[in-house]
Length: 99
Picture (cartoon, rainbow, N blue to C red):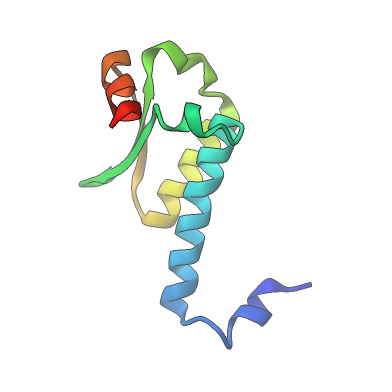
């Protein structure tokens, strides 16, 4: 099974690139959170000039495993950015869950 061959008639090169970028970011979120929406809601993933930033609450920093770092690096690579992990204050993470 070769997915690329099946997608070529359906998607433009730009759309394939965007699908890879989105998929890499989704895999990062799934690996970090174990697919827990509640845990994922405490984080932020965003771009700033030159960087793909993944903010994680200080209290959950231990969950940033080597696999999470690899997924972030892969996601950043697909976007042509440098990966960066930052601490997010617990208060900020709590506010975003209630908003």
